[in-house]
Length: 279
Image (cartoon, rainbow, N blue to C red; front, side, top):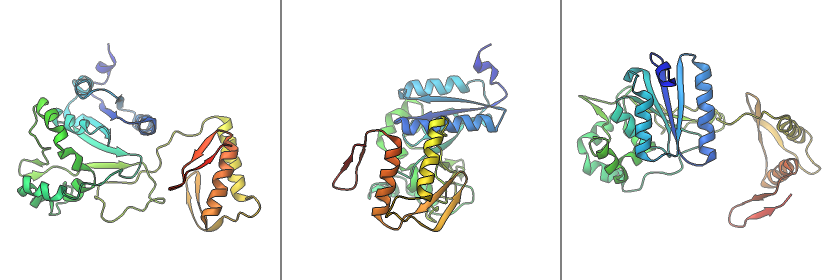
C-alpha cells in the first residue's frame, strides 16, 4: 500500500513553495506544525519543479481525495499553485513569511477595470466572506499577469482567474503572514482575511545556539560601556522580547555584540555606504 493510498479519507494538504532557503524553510516548519496540530491530516511539500511537473504532482497527491478534503498552500513565489487549485477544484491558501515584496503597477487598476468592468465594479462592494478589491490589490494582482495566460490555457482554464462562482464572488482567499502583529500592526487597508500568525522560523535546537541566545540576552541586560538600551515600551512576546533602541549608535553596538558572539565573517550593508565588519 502506497503513502497516497493511506491518505484516503484524511485531509490532504500540499504545500507548494519556491524561492531561496529563506522562503522554503518557513514552509517546512509550517508543514511540521500543521501535521502535529491536526492528527488527521497528511502534508506533503513540493518545491522547485516546473509548472507542468507541479501540476502533475499535485494531481497525483490529491487524486484520491474529495475536493472538500483537499488543500493547496503556496507562497507568493509559487502562484502557479493558485491556478492549479482552480483547475483541480480544491481550496488554496497563500502564505508569506515577510511583508509583501512589491506593489501593483500604477496602471494595474485602470487596466483591470477596462478589461473586466463588471467584475471590477462588483469587487468594489463589500460582501461578507467574499473576495474584494482589497484582496486583488494587496496580493492577487500578479495572478492576472499575461505571464500565466499560456499556463492557464494548458490547464483548460479561462485566461483570467475566476473570482466569481455562479452568481456570487468566490470565498475570500486567505493570506497567512508569518509575522507577529506585535511587531507589525496590521494596517486597516489590508484585506480582512490576512491574519498575522507570528514568526515562522526554525527553532534554535543546538546547545551552542541556546548559549548564544542567552549570551545576547545577557548583553542586552548588561550592555557594554556607553550603550544604554531603552527599556520603556518593550513588547512581551512568547520566548522573546522586543527592545526599543534610542539611536542608531546603540543599534550598531547591539549588532556588533551579536556578531562578536557569532564569531563568523559577516558583512553589514547599511544604506548607501556598505559597512564591512569582519569579526
